[in-house]
Image (cartoon, rainbow, N blue to C red; front, side, top):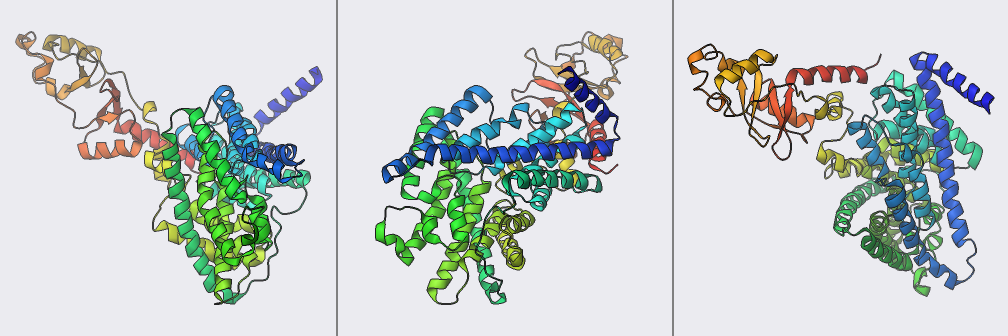
Length: 591
């Protein structure tokens, strides 16, 4: 044991002696290895839970447990998160973006495993969500904590966080290129010569781990037919449908989540969500779990298998019934996903996006076919629909194109993949500027973008820029006392506070200079006759863009900072903001 510890210690010492670029590549390899193992572990955990719970089903009566399992899984996840983790681990991709913009890319250690534990129970027991967001959060946490262990700077922590996210996507889908593009396009990681190699190393390593442990098959087997140029107009129509479907997905998801959050008692919320989810699954079996089984059936042209065991008997073979059934599945998937997450389950929107995209593609193709206008391959349209929905919901067309091509082996359909992804992206951009991941962050001003200026301003934190070495006075302070304060201070501004600590004015040295040597006024003149109200106030919760706007409108170099109660905190100066901005911008640039 002592020899092992000595070996590990020597290994750490060797790593710390490496030049920076070599160290980053080695850590990227380690991050990819850990992310790949985490992805494999999550997949096996989900399948193990499913096998234990449903592998023994023989009768229809046994299948009724499908109605209870999701609610039980949500309850287990709720108790685990509430009493063990004691932290919010939902909406993994959004949490990663928030960590980059507001937490110096630092993610808590428990996120290296907590999302895997909670999501495996949630999804394995039938929660109608995806495993991708939890594994992205896990991979990002692994990279972030590895970088923190070696005490790296913000830029390096962010890079390894991105490597972890790329490795997680690559590992769970066996899609190395999609993992890299996901990190660049969705996590807004800046593409540079110094970042591309670590991302490549991490993605390839995680994919290799996944292939080694899960086999060399693609994630979705398909029954695709060769591309026909005559179908391009219909793919164009599919792109428009995907764009509007994504608009419904984004707005309905956020609206339903906000509505459910109004139920403050978590256990009452769980009960109502579990009941609603159970009823939806009873009526629409494809809503059980991730839905990848139904999606695979659609990709192989078997819509009856995709519909599952329904209550509708002979109606299920009717062409129009199938259309109406899957239209309903599409619309109610939002509810089942929201019920799962709001009821205490842990999962993401990544999987539901692919599921709903496949349904849109199938529905458009089936409508075209039954109308007699033209004949199109339904499996092809289902596959391309996945890319169209993903492109619009996540505002990530490149990720959608490469991911769907990699997970289905559908490289022969690159032209329709590009057309549908671009069309759906263009369609939703007319209504929604942000993706479902970034909409909340954009509203709060916490969103990182590819614009370096805006990215730096987003990362800058007001708390770190507030200067508190100003000597305060009260309104009844005499001029004589003020002169003594001035002699002790190296500042030229003096905040005036009432006895409750609220800022009521500011005295500038320039305003005192004319009278400060008139000793006859030392006892008769008080601060309240010399002070002025600031032209603007900075609130402790303001983002940096708002702070700069206030400086611009006020035309000053210093502004007071107050909290939500109006109590004085300190001053922020334009010069310190510019200095911090330059330092951060240098971190964003190549060495």
